[in-house]
Amino acid sequence: MRLAAAALVLAAAGCAEPVARAPVGPELFAVIPGPDGHVGAIVVRSGGTEGTLDRAYAARRIAADGTAGPATLSPEEVRREFGGTLEALPGRPASFTLYFLEGKDELTPASRVELEKVFAELKRRPAPDIVVIGHTDTVGNLAFNDKLSLARAQRLREMMIELGIPSERIQAAGRGKRELLVATDDNTPEPRNRRVEISVR
Image (cartoon, rainbow, N blue to C red):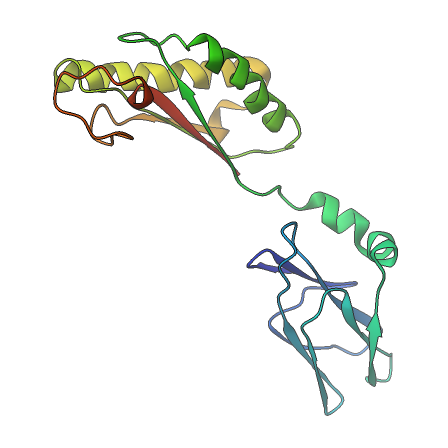
């Protein structure tokens, strides 16, 4: 199985490479569009023949004697043939930004509401990989902001652990005031810079 540019290429009884040479035995190769509709392509070679699959739901069936023929699957047939495999795939990456009160590791009221969306995303992923990066505005010295940005990231990490996410799946780091979302002069209280960025895969 190969996931490239949001296009999924599946084999019924094995893994498909960009150029797939079918083994002896019945095989089914299919191109399934990604969630955004993008379609990839593969070339399937078997028994001296070659076929390119580059349309949504295009498929190629390989018989037990190695002969190959084109096929087109309906979305319903795809679900029937590959449903278990599709369900096991990781979800698309998701990103969230939450904002904090000035000088604190406490979320703004609006971000406390947004946090529920983050938790909902985490709950629907069986084994998420999460990176939490804390940031500050430019008020205060470098050491203060480094400590505060890390405290913000760690605060959210602890909330996720309380939600049941294994601690080893969550990385937390602080960038202080080094990576501003909005460029400002030093000692400028900019709410959009007081944030934590969460990446979920």
